Length: 393
Image (cartoon, rainbow, N blue to C red):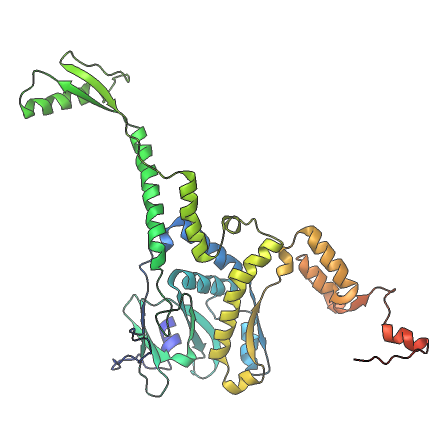
């Protein structure tokens, strides 16, 4: 059984269904992936890679008593083909590059029990009428295979969702800055090539036929620019008004280049320090809340909706993705936080060790909570003195 059969085995492939499911905006409810050229830009790839790398460190947790078999499976991996890091990295990469990421449920061989999730990258996805009230998502992949699944069983993450009721918009807003970056790179490349050559312009007398001029040009190149010319150009007396052609390719200055790159940074919500791994402390908290936590919230809601029924969700069953932001503090800030929270009973020893990237203590020794001896319960102290402990609200 291949991956395609694993994903779509319990549903028919959507043949014979041609009617689009009607949306409110009037746009055809279809998504077509980009040709990948945007991801070929080194700056865009760096932005997406930085977001994907940090998003891949999110930790999944399954809360609630429903689907205990799934809880044990998801503790180690999202599917038999990926680790959680690989799943989260690919999901975030597809989302940033396409503004849509489709997550498919994986079922067991009998097609009954949910056992994982898989992010797919179709070349086209259409919202079509199904057999029941729920519409279907019909996927078309690069190899021509088609598969369909009810919308409520699929997961869909979106960015820049505006014109379409279901899918996110394309990344056409990036075309102008990417074109400018491409032209700048070409200008620098041509400038390097031209700097390795030299060109001259001269007036040649005693030549009246174009054929004679062409022969003289070839002779001059052969005698001066090939072989052992020694780098010295020799001009006969038939040449006059000799001038070197100095070509200076235009490239934007540093300030203009910075503005172009900033437009790309603004689009992805990152900065140069984030790409170069220079953020920590408060700067990291800002990055987490603006770029990582938003992804974690959407992914948590999407996987929860496609996994649990309405009744199960009302009973607090959900999937969450969290991150220990304290690990990105400076060492001085870590020391202050762990010291203050450990001796007040907020952290146990394992919590404090996790901040410093240390493993838990064996045999559950780090699970106990401690408080400093001079701290007393205010009510207990007053009761010992026989004072009135009633307070007016």
